[in-house]
Image 1 (cartoon, rainbow, N blue to C red):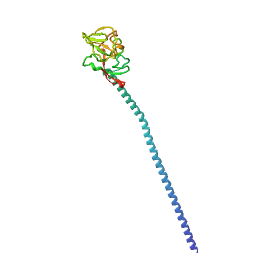
Image 2 (cartoon, rainbow, N blue to C red):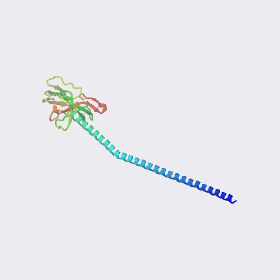
Image 3 (cartoon, rainbow, N blue to C red):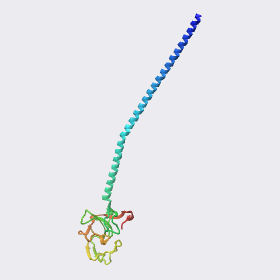
Image 4 (cartoon, one colour):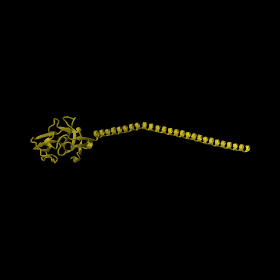
Length: 242
């Protein structure tokens, strides 16, 4: 009986020992799992921190680049504007004359408020002709520009009689289909045009300040700025001038 009891006790003790081993193994597994979880968490946190740093650096570099790009855009636009103004200035100085008509002295050919273009190089290879509409320095005040029609050429004799114009010894009046209306002019006048000068009249003869009234009656060749070629505004008046 004692032997059996001892065997039972031993068996009982071995069973308890086995349970302890099992329990201890379970604890070890839990500890390992916890350690692995902690390591994973650390690795994930480290990776997230690295990603945040990369994004922060990228964001800061973009912020730094933005002002530079804006500056470049501003500078490029300024350059474009400066170049455009420079080209416009050169064109106005050497190629065209841009004029706005303030009075009705050239009606109905050019109306008040019309904007016209004159070509500066129009007489580079030729001389002004009778009937040309030109832009020139006003002989009595060269700070002002005038627009009139050439009636008398250098060296000619111009007679105004009964509202008609006669050139030199001609008995036939000058044909003028461009004048606005019948010319109310009762005074007979004679003008001898100097060399290199021109006699100018407006198409609206009854309302035009021209060579008939100027103290310096003639326009010198070198004071002609260009030939008025076409009207560009208003659009209803757009077209070539003659």
